[in-house]
Image (tube, rainbow, N blue to C red):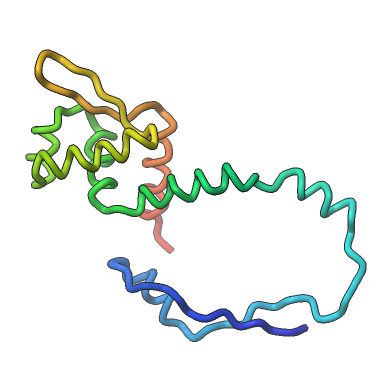
Amino acid sequence: MKMRTKPNLHRMSLNPAVNEVANQPQTDTPICDIPHQINSNLTSNIQTQVLNTRKAQRMAEFFSLLGDANRLRLLSVLAKRELCVCDLAAALSMSESAVSHQLRALRAMRLVSYRKQGRQVFYSLLDRHVLELYNAVAEHLDEEE
């Protein structure tokens, strides 16, 4: 079996566990050494289940959007309750302008929605899928190794 080495291209993270993995010596990834016949039944079945490129790109953009700490902080508050922009800004110690900017990005990816009440605008998570995603990630990160 041949071994292929991949260069370590990780950036430093605020999460020590991520840095620990990134700083470990590179391990080789095993690949097939001996040419063999491809199982066409298996591969054709798998090919029908592979995520299409357009959806993969949209999902990558979605997860990239969630890669911002301030957006995740906003989602953490909105996972608990609906709030107006000024209350969100105060709760997160951010300017209303910065909160508004982050909410615009979250709204563009259909993660949050808003309603107007007079001159106030209240934001909430768009639907249960967003709440379930947030809760699943939070629960995963709270698990002990």
